[in-house]
Image (cartoon, rainbow, N blue to C red; front, side, top):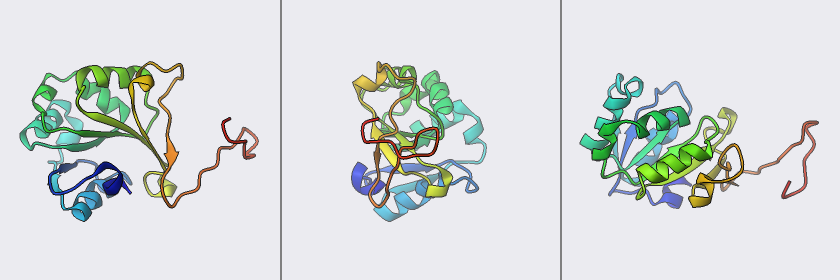
Length: 169
């Protein structure tokens, strides 16, 4: 679904920076291999060093990266990110994406698209996706929407008593 929806292909370079013991590493590894994109394996020191990650994004002409909101916030403050000119898709997941962070992203990287992915580990990575727009950067909520259910999934919204709530609630 990811390759088809976001057009990953031979023109892209995707970084594998998530340790293989985490579910999020699965798409970082499989998606580029399945789309013909180039897989760039980050040195093990990179995920813990924000400046090193920003330099890697620039030096390796990375087009696609996946981060958690806290790492995204740190990257956006990193001067080395200015040189990451090949970046076109940033996927964010693992925690709620605050509207203020989406706003900061749009200000700092206006030509790059931001996508909020959500999915419990039991769903094998992602179950919903949301392409962030201008409204998400100023929205009244405390987080950006988690989006629409991905192909092949069924989503249910439950209330506090674990009952399905009507659509739109």
